[in-house]
Length: 252
Ligand code: PTJ
Image 1 (cartoon, protein in one colour):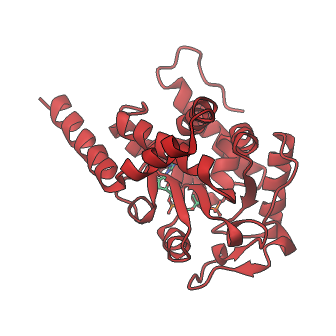
Image 2: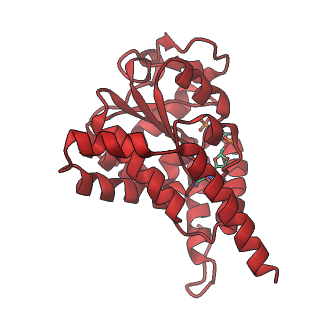
Image 3: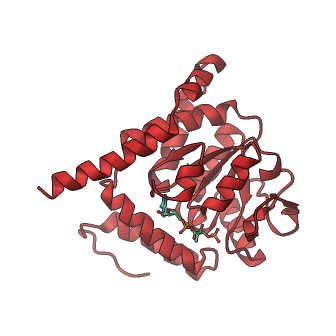
């Protein structure tokens, strides 16, 4: 491993990079995942590398939606497995969600490697690997169309991150609610999703777990009210305004 000096001002960010590189070396992060990570870092930088209020609002609406869901599924790709494997499993257990591997650059080897990472992180069951991905999402032509008939196919709510816009759109067209974690508020995924958490998965997952523990005791009515009041367009606008304002303040 490369040596990161203890006092390096960007130590955290460098450690996170190492996790992605390690995932690449172990064969479960796609090479394109490195590019995606760099784009994410750039947006994170613009947002001060902190969870902002618009992300908290989206996280609360996501938790309410997940707690009300009948068949929630957490969709996992290479970058997520590298960055938040334990948190994926923990959140899955808290909300009784299935965990499914779904890759843009799909190979059975990568699926199996991700399953291994998730099992080592405590998962009892991992869907979408090899033959299990026997169902198809209509109108989708990437390898992401192959899904598990016990998972994404029948899900009413899908939580995903670092995603391409096509699948989000196809899932929404199938009548599913899509919760997307994406640092880029301009991406097609961010625009197509039912709820967009504009934050880093590294910070968003622990917060989702935290709020599930708090909101578990809420009544159905209270959860439904949170979902009803939520406005994703307003959240995306707030994130762009935040970036614009921050840049104009810095450039003074
Ligand atoms: O593992 P696979 O085969 O499914 O491939 C995964 C990647 C990420 C390669 C694939 O989905 C892809 O190419 O994604 P995109 O189109 O590059 O989109 C990734 C989005 O995630 C971009 O909008 C980034 O800004 C955002 N992003 C990157 N890192 C993070 C992030 N969002 C949240 N947290 C991050 N750490």
